[in-house]
Image (cartoon, rainbow, N blue to C red; front, side, top):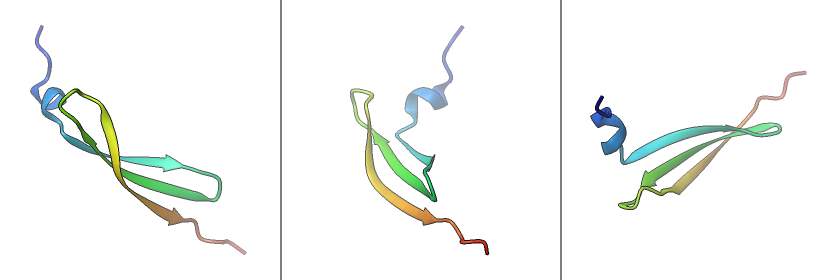
Length: 50
């Protein structure tokens, strides 16, 4: 059985993180040693419903 080539060559990813009252999107890049590092984070405020 062989690994997917997509999994081993992926060098960046976006993660959606839920918070209390706000959500975040993070952009991460994988270093040569396989550790993911966050380079940017964007806050997405939730709309206030009356």
